[in-house]
Amino acid sequence: DEEGANQYSSSFEPVAARLIVEPCTSNTGNDSKRQAKTLDLVRVETSNTYIVTPPMAIDNDCSGDQQGDSKRQKLSETTPTIKQQLVTMPARSIGVVPGENSPSCFFLDPMVLPQGHFANKLRTVLSQWVYNPLEPPSTSQFGYTTRELAHICRSSLSEIEYALSNRVYGAEDALVIPDGVNGVTRYGMLSEEGRQTVSMAIVSTLLESDLDLEWTSSDNNMEKTMELSPLMREVRSNWQREEGADNELADEVVWHGLRPIVSYNSVCSKDEIPKQAQLIVEEVAKLAAHNVFLRGTPRSASGWEEDEFVEAWSIRLPTMADKYQASMELLSGIAISEMVEDKLQWRYFPASGLPLNLSLRIKSMLAMRSTWTVEEAKPYFEKMALNESEIVALLKSHKK
Image (cartoon, rainbow, N blue to C red; front, top):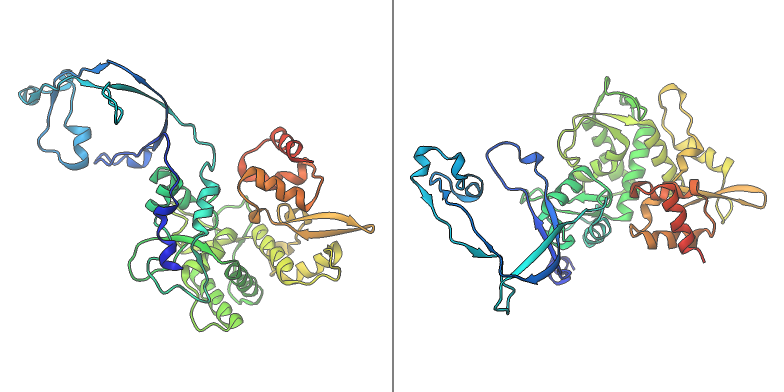
């Protein structure tokens, strides 16, 4: 229900003891360097403490948000002209708890936010708005704005904006919902069917295209690039032909599929589509591997034998520079291998499909396979910034 899903207020978690301080807007031009702060209320005590402030100067030329920075100046810093405008500020108690008569003292500690501290919540909230490119939504209120996401995730607005602009941990799958009417950026997630069809269209386009494609390895520079718009047009055309769709694939959806496999210079948000880019060899090979697992049919029901998989994989690889041959090491975090009747087989098990919650992720991994080495498990915790000892401890604590 599209209208009901947007009533996010009913799903708010109670904010128990957290203060979020957003950076103030000023005319100094340094706003980008200001960071939001999140503080936890650790205790409240009865107090007769009063805050006494010296006389302060008021600058009548300032208004709005700028007053907080400019209207108060210390006596030692004021000029003779401003000194004539000094106003004595009365002493004030620190605060009174609602329902209490006595003033109270509030103790706030800065909260050290771990990497992706709202990742699981953000991904869960985004998944409430699933965009199907074959059946685009008719309402312009589809998806959440950044302010709504910040409110639901109990995080500062600047943290959410940074997470979405840079597609950090927990926001990698966020999709800008196409909207050519209001101009308000809203976010959701691409449906699994949509993701697969777009990926297939990209692989087909790279295999069939007559465009002069520019390839790079992950450590190469951006000396020679290609125009991205012709490639996007071909992907859109291939998708429409393969799916028999009446509608066109939106640029936002095409870019959502292309962004992980291209290298480009960007100084703004990753939502902004660049004009020039290079295809990353390893990422294209990984995308082709995903397509083998999703669309291919192995001879054995238990999985792909390695030789069989390599053959199917090579067919889906476009012609790349330097006669590139994909390595099985690229399947790390995409599939797992095991010996079945003296033959090595591969089963699809993408890290991107696992829960972001550590405990649930471990349980999913152990349900797939009871024993994991540290090297096998590493790719599944890569974005969680865990070291080897922490991974070992997690595996041991959850193993039956």
